[in-house]
Structure formats: structure tokens, C-alpha cells
Image (cartoon, rainbow, N blue to C red; front, side, top):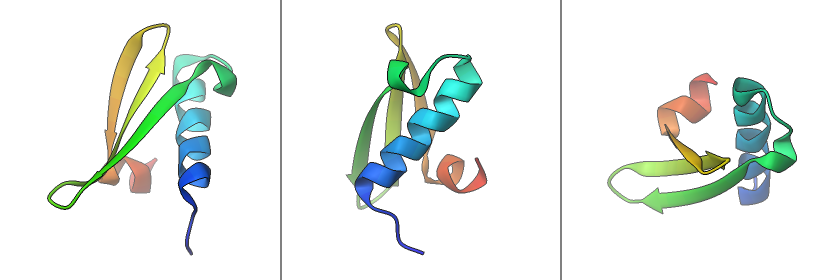
Length: 60
């Protein structure tokens, strides 16, 4: 299965919104890629940032 960048961002927004008990539209996500660390993301709600890495993407 291959997901587009937008589908990954949407999934992170949805998951993080459930975790923080907010609407997915309240979540801002910055998706990043590095050859050494793979994909990572920063999810923001009300100025608070939480970090996700590739392992989080697969297990969540």
C-alpha cells in the first residue's frame, strides 16, 4: 500500500486530534524526511508540539 504525502498528514491530524480531544482541523502537521532518520512529523495544537517518528506512524 502506498500513501500520498497528504494522506499521511491527514492520518496524523486525525490521530493527534483524537489523542488531544480536539477537531482534526485544529491540528497543524509538519512532515519531514531525512535519509538517516526517515519520516518524522511535528503536530501542533494550541502552540504545543508533539513529535512523531516512523515507528509511531506504523504502530498508531
